[in-house]
Length: 137
Image (cartoon, rainbow, N blue to C red):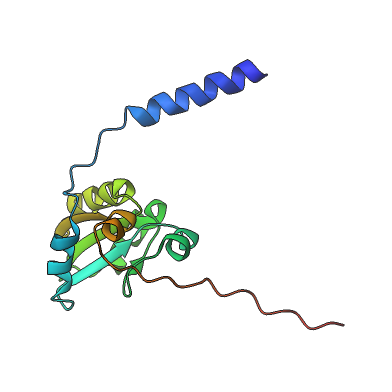
């Protein structure tokens, strides 16, 4: 059984390693800041899970669509904005940017939130609200 699990893990790792890198440009902090200077023309789409955004930080205004759901929600994305996709280090963001570009969106590129912060950018950290305590019976 262990051998089977090991083989499955190795096969998954090999498949992941062979995935082609994203074609989207990875934006620097300066490039993103320049785009954010005209907020009415740009839209950030964060493709991370909510817990990643709250843990690692994000941007004050963004559209949150996890990468696995992106293609199902293309009609909810405005086409009159320059799109920047966000993930932790721009890998998922790059894949999301490629997907959006293939559907005709005006995509500037992808940015890694953690990379942006390491380059001196400021991220916003918001805690996920905890569920309200239920009343005792």
